[in-house]
Every structure is written in C-alpha cells, then in structure tokens.
Image 1 (cartoon, rainbow, N blue to C red):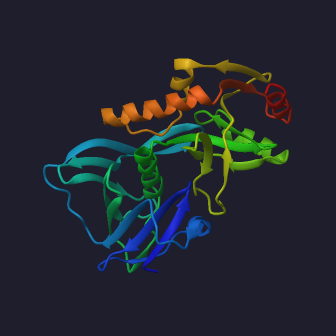
Image 2: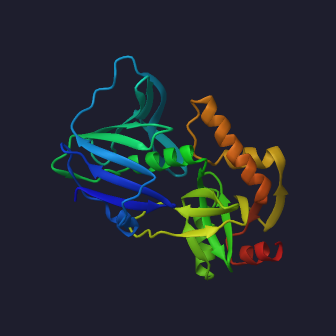
Length: 294
C-alpha cells in the first residue's frame, strides 16, 4: 500500500510513501491499529534510498545495542541509533538488528508534525516502523505532546487502573500474569504511554508483540515494585515519588528544555496520582492486598 494511518495510544500516525518511496507493509503487530482517516497528529513521508546527514550536524545522543542475558544487559554494538541536530532540523539515524543491510534516517521536528524518513537497503516494500523506529517515533510523539513513556505493566482490576513499574527482573510480567489469571484486564506488561486527557490520566499499550491489540485504562495508582517475602505497600510522595518514577521512564537527556518539560509532566502526574512502593509475593494474595489498601 502507499499510505495508511495507525492509532497508537490515541495518536493518529499517518505513513505515506513519497513518489520515490517503497510500498508500505505494516508488520502483523500493527494490523489492529490501522484506521481509515484523513487526519493525523504526525505525518511521516517515506523515501527509499540513502540520506546523507549534513556535514556539520552535531551528534547529541548515541545508543548502544544491548541484549538481555539472565537479567543483565550486554552491549553488542556501540552505535545502534543516534540523534543529531542541525540548523535544518533534527535527525535520527539507526541500524536494524533484524536486517543488517537496512539503515534509516528520520528527519523530525519537536514543533512541526511533518517528518521525512529515508530507508536504505530495502527492496520495493518495507515495514516503515520496524524496530527500533516504532519505539523512537512513539517516544518523540510523547515528547512533543507532554506525555510519558515508561517501562511498566498496566492492568485494570475491577474498573481501576494500576501501573506496576520497575527495572528488569523486578516482577512487571509476573504481576501482570497474576492479575490476568485473576480476571483483570492486562493493558501491557512491558511498555506503556501515559497521557493526561481532560484532567484524567490514561495508560495505553504500544504494539510490541505480534498479538497485541489496542488497550487503555484510566490510571488510579502507580506502584514501584520489588519481589518480597510479604505483601507490603508504602506510600511515596513529593520529590521521592517523582525521582523513582522518572528512573523507569524512557528519556533521552540531551536537551535542557526537553528535560524540564519532562520533569514537569512527571511532577504534575505524581501530584495527582498516588504513588507507592509495593513488595509482593508472586501469588493471588497481592491483588487482595492492593484492593484492601485502596
């Protein structure tokens, strides 16, 4: 196809092949997000071929490629993707772990919502949101919208939305599984977007797995989780709550203005949504403990 729209976390993203661009074929995990629309929050025009960055571009951020082995991240490549700044705009250059011949450059703006994407090393068709472009594009949409992307699992239990956040190995997937087995609705167990809409906070999933389908919930409480010998909830507030939540958020700290905007978004959220630490045993009793301590 030459163009299509996706609704992800409430964002309307339009992908459009340019005259010199490839046919666009979204991966299976995006199929449930396709919608019919002429509107968009951001439009990305896709070109085929190599794009050479301006010579005087300044590299602001570089991310290594790391794989997880027994809950440890092992760097296997120093230069995975990078962000550059130039007077003509912002650029994101990336490789693709699943296709070593494929590279891409995204020209984007933190103000104008019309972006350009050049993809090299492809045939006549491609998925324009192959990892890591999917997460990076969504991240910058949260940045310009004042929203938050976080490593967390999210569930809805009896009409109330809970977010369980922590670093790898803290139990995000475990607690999501326990909640799911007890009849709760799982929003996602890995990566969520938090948005403030009409004075209420909502959590949304993002397409990570092949069988993901769009899901959202109002957010009522945030838990910072740890495995423990007993179920224990301890409220956290103020600067401590903000710093602990930020530690699990996805953020690219190279721009003071973006850092200040992000800090403001998290601070406001933590002043509205209760935050607590949760030590839990991996069984059904943790859900009872949460509901009893509402």
